[in-house]
Length: 210
Ligand SMILES: CC(C)(COP(=O)(O)OP(=O)(O)OC[C@H]1O[C@@H](n2cnc3c(N)ncnc32)[C@H](O)[C@@H]1OP(=O)(O)O)[C@@H](O)C(=O)NCCC(=O)NCCS
Ligand SMILES: [Zn+2]
Image 1 (cartoon, protein in one colour):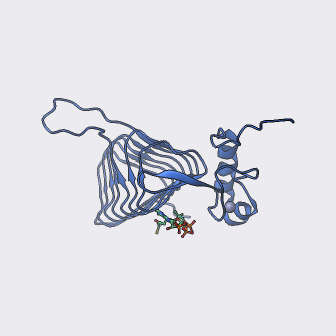
Image 2 (spheres, rainbow, N blue to C red):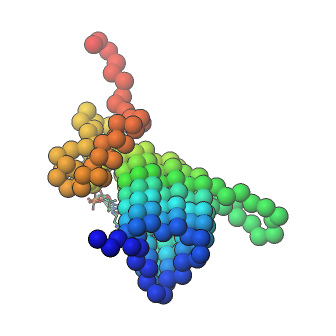
Image 3 (cartoon, protein in one colour):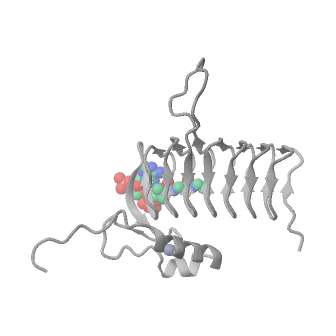
């Protein structure tokens, strides 16, 4: 099977960009030298991928997203259209230097359309960010956040069919819906990440007689 990368003729892929098998780069995208697109990544129309950025296996970047240096995207992440990343916490013209502040999108996370991600945050594995949210703090794995600033509202399962209260005695994030809806590879990744995730939204400590 021909699994060569597909690059639209209008896209500008600089020499020295690493494009893996099965990746697609759509109309007018710009992929800089020193960036890496892993297997089966999809880069939408008008997307910019800066030098030094890695987009992990199977991730999909929707139209009109600028991914600046310092942003790391894990495997099977979904970046909604018009998501905005940042990499300078205190931008100023005229300074002699500035620090690139890194942002990490962990495996399987999804960002809704038009989310704004302030640099320096870690978005947990299989977390979901609602459309239009402004992310200013770390987001735990398997957690749904919305709003400005984004706050956790629910836990969310790996396939996103089930949302659960943040604190619940059945906080199982790998459920029957996930086993039905997810392909084997993503399900296996979700199981691993669920096992590894510290239960940051853990149950309240029981008090009284037990
Ligand atoms: C966050 C999200 C996953 C929640 O979905 P849901 O659980 O079905 O949400 P509901 O429609 O039942 O809304 C529940 C409440 O959350 C609010 N809400 C929903 N989405 C919200 C958002 N993005 N930001 C702020 N509040 C939101 C609703 O207004 C509602 O509030 P209420 O309880 O006061 O009435 C979804 O709304 C979302 O933003 N998905 C991302 C869509 C997207 O951008 N896709 C990109 C590819 S096209
Ligand atoms: Zn599920």
